[in-house]
Image 1 (cartoon, rainbow over the protein chains, first blue to last red):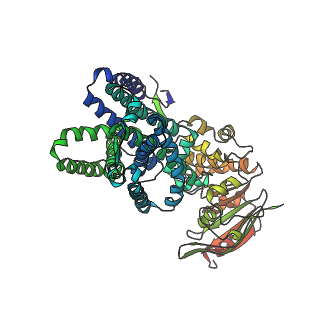
Image 2 (cartoon, rainbow over the protein chains, first blue to last red):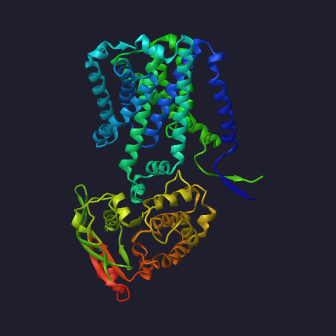
Length: 334
Length: 235
């Protein structure tokens, strides 16, 4: 018997082809999908992006934040502020929001990185509340009751309603693709190697000269910047913003954690599976009001008890599958 | 020979518990010393202190004239001190080669490269794409040693490299040691297997309950001295 070692597997190669085809079909959605379906899919892509980013931060860098809504809301508010007062094009404003979030995340990190574990989580939440209360003070942006995106700004995206809907759909799809690819390429890079090493053993990693603090800071800054961009996209679709909607811990953190945990934390496939499960549950149970939230909680508890590595962890253990080839494996040669 | 490392009345503690009491030690360029002692004598604590995993007063650990007792582990690694940790501490999600490459992350110049590590342990080249956890204990120990060498350290510290390995595997690893220290490296070998440790070192320190109970040249040391220093009783 001879063997060869490879990163890719048949499943991952088939997965790549299927993903490329699926992407083409999805990109053509404005020609085959209805208005409501497109809006739902756009929302799915943005949640998928948030989940991938949170997964990189919590599942790989061990930064379990419950305060990323700070950056979702910040991105949203920057879209409004920079277009209304700065006269920027909405897309430029969204990208600028990402840059500003990156700069803002550095001083925040120096503050909250002093905290460990549960204290870190609480610290991030406190920061997000500070954001919410601060933006509620800004009367020019509507204070506590929020404001709407002016018609002129909305029209600058595209003249017609259908053109606008297609554009925000493509922006959401593009964002999700960029986030997933970036996370994947990052994890395959040398820096990603260091991050994986830190996750495996902080003691051994620091003994090899890996600066744990700086590596985690880099991840925090990059995820925060991306999260703000996604926040900008979210509120460019909603066209209205208020402090409670922008900095909602339920919408932008609890649901995201649910997605990552049931999908499989610390895997690239987990957030994708989790997002599909989350939206399947939401779309079938949305009419039942609070029962929907109770079912979500129940699903989360059952998955955590029965499959602590999430649905993807279960699948991977049973079938040895990996759609994003990150690890090497030995294959028997035919 | 210039002094590479000196410990000056090193006290180390975990919270309220003090593990080392005024340990003095010196290590000259190119020297190989053995550290022996029973379980809980403070050997691993000493290595953790030197490598920066445990914080101390700066002046208690001096490396090439520079106080390093208060530095972080990653900074100490960049200065050229490498630790082959007890229990190997490989990265299970990474392949053999990725584990080795991470060792070279500090980017210090020197004789050690991926190729030289594979020359020293040819089996690792065959297994380089495999997950590090799929290897046998001895092979994993080779990865841990290779990973430390990849940093091209001036001083390498081995913590219990024979722990949990079969005698034949221990022998093959010890056979490789001269090839390592022959590169002019200074080394500190912590071992429970006293005879093995003495066979490759020129001086020996024995720790007992956090204190140095014996310091001697290996060729001069007697069996009784070791027994006395190790157990604290006269045989």
